[in-house]
Amino acid sequence: MNPPYATSLEGHETSEQDYRLKEPYPPRAEFALPPITLEEHVFRHSGWSAHRRRVFAAMIAAGTGRSALHRFANCGCGAIVERSRDGDYRVKANYCRSRWCKPCAAARAAALADAIRFRLLGKTFRFLTLTLRSSATPLSDQVDRLIRSFRELRRQVIWRETVDGSIAVIELTRSNGCWHPHLHVLITGHYVDQKQLAERWHAITGDSYIVWIKKVGNAQETVNYVAAYASKGIDASVEADHDALTEAIAALKGRRLVITTGAFYGVEKEEEPNDQEPEPDHDYEPYWQPVGTLTAIVHRAKHGSVEAREILAKLRFPWKAYGEPFI
Image (cartoon, rainbow, N blue to C red; front, side, top):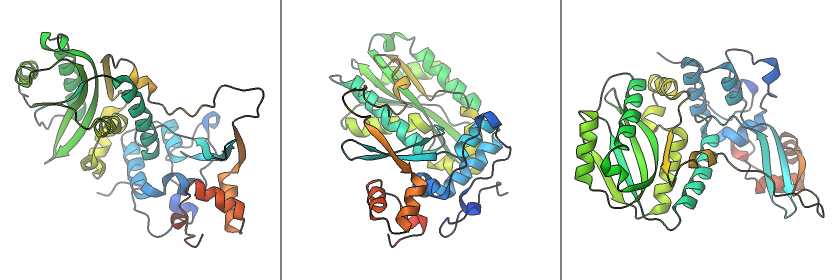
């Protein structure tokens, strides 16, 4: 059965009917955002429009609240272009910060990766994967069990004597109708014997013994991988299946995907993108100054403004997705 609102877009999204998500409930007046414009949508979401509709349908099916749906549907609205004293440009807008929104998740992952790298300076670290045996039980129960088992593992002597700090993220995959929740963990400290760790994990879970651990060679790649899953928690095998995605959204609702201890404690609180201005300097004008709305600048560029086109070129506005490949 096809889910509602999950139709893929065809051609360029040049009308309100094409790009605007249909919210099932009107937003509360006090929390209402300005409706996202076509120009804002193209700038923020053109790279994942069809998938965004599928995610929105799954969020509705999972019982997501009206405020969260409203923020998701209008993520990127109210976009203002700003120019710095150095001549750089950026866009400030209303963002939903949902883990299911790809642009928001990407920004969060980048910020978290920076925070993790800072905590890892001068440290030797290893990459650990803890798995549960495949099961057809409800996903929420499996996630609960995975978290409980990891908590118990951290109480074991082998963990307390070898691990100084850890950051664990949940990843959900699915195959043959079964969920495969597992934890990816970055750990700092001393050498950990894989066989002994696997034995303790099996003793804790009762049926799961697959434990994979190695010293990290490519730190950049590993940190980016962990940060990406800390921001979304699922892979492509789940994203493409409406029912599976709906169950994942419901199971992860209200959960933090990041578990930190020791040297990594609190790093997940640093994951929000930092776009604050530098400390005010009263001898200079503000570092960022508004230039105009993104929508207005796009319209000016369409009507021949060289300045507007230069600004949008620096912002990498996707003209082809907008239906204006000649600009």
